[in-house]
Length: 374
Image (cartoon, rainbow, N blue to C red):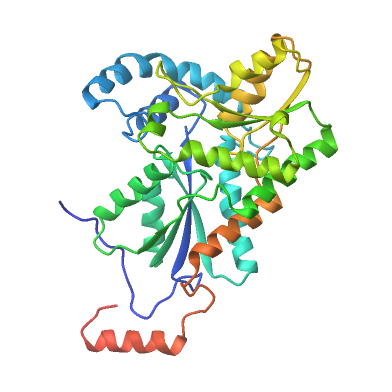
């Protein structure tokens, strides 16, 4: 197997950040546009990941290409169109909410770390779609970064999400001759800063919108068999929920943990979000509020599936008031928590010192003496 060509290198040089260290913030990804062709490309990549669908490849290939990619893209495109952020009057900004908020997270994280004295470059990479994780790793390597922290926007670890990000990094590294030092953040489901950011989000909602009879914490679902095979996601979701409820002073009767986004006919983690909301309405629960603690930033699963579809189902079943509590997005407590998490995992790497000019000059001189062209 041939390795990728190494980027040009000049001895004794430093990048504009005067740093060797970068953070690659990673998220699931999003289609490039709310159209059927864009969704077909995106879903084709997403649903071809063996971490996401653990069905023998020949069988799954027939299902994916024979059925799913024929019909699902058009349906999904309409859902994305309903939440797509339009550009401003100057044609700037806009796009998928997940991409917009994730970009802001990367930018604000870099600023927050800079305020703490860290010379760290921060980029966003998507597991599926653009900008891809490999392309962003290429960019960081070309800029001269030799140490990279991989920080997924997945608070709770799962083989279907966090491990898939790591797979993409490993795959890139397997084709790279000179691999940077790499570190990975597996999870932060119980990190005090993350929990505090959620607490402040809920309390702000209570102060501005009032408090409902029940708080529903909805996490993204995964097939139940993954739990029995050793995936720790289920446990970490419940720990996040328990810690949040304790900080809010909620009894077990005042909140529920549910799982959303079921796909296919297999049994997924229960209880399912929408059926639970319908049952609550039918039992006379007059008002509910839903938060999604597994999603740091808003996306299709929160803005369309919860704020639109789940709301309609609950109200149609007899519920009176439904409110969705937005994700952490670019809130200051969340950015501060994200910086805390990054800072913890950057420990031991010198991220505050600029390269010594005399040392760089000496490196160039010695390299030239050994015949280096640059």
